[in-house]
Amino acid sequence: MAAIDFFGLFFLGLGPGLAFFIVLIARKSFLVLLALFSAFLWLIVLLVTSAIFRGFVPLDPEQGPYAGMLIASVVIEELTRYGAWRMHRKTLEVFDVMARNSGHRFSLLDKLYMATAWGYGHGACHAVFFFLSFLPLTTNDGTYYLSVCPQMSIFLVGALYSLSFGMILTCLMIIAFDGYVSKNWVHVAAAPVIHCGASMLTLLNFQQGGCVPSMSTLLAIGGVLVVYTVGLCWRKANAA
Image (cartoon, rainbow, N blue to C red; front, side, top):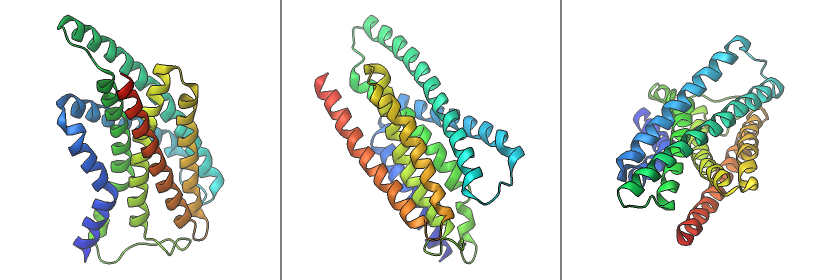
């Protein structure tokens, strides 16, 4: 049963992301390297953020202190996103020059692939940091529940968090990068607002039975963002 729990939760939380990697990212070696670099960058950001808040733990088990921590973490990540965009823009300039010198064209579709790799690294890092790191505990006998969330085990909540934020963070990177390129300030503003809102939704886990509406809403947000982002990329690719 322990093996079933482990692999069931593994494929629920990480399976869709792995399938996405195999189908899209792994087809181009440069995208693999970019996704790995992105994941490494975000891992450093999360480690630095954890070190900053290390002096404040343990926090009171209330929504207020955790809300402040989440808002500060989102601010740090959004500043990093802008820094990633600056690196992305410099990389595109180099590639455009190389493409012109070789008689080729660095297409808009290639740029969308790169934005996707940046976002995939962000989502993958969150999955490893907040889910995969404690998944081996499922190999023990029994499982863990919180008294305020008897409907779902801690591991199931972690798997659904990994799945939902994998979709959310990947899509928000594409939307934000498109906003910076096209000067679409709605897209630029949407990324931090949705990111902060999704993070705040996790505070529902403090409420009795709040894990069910929290995870359900996060999955819905992720699904809507996927549909919107696919439509955005389709329109951009056809207009190119």
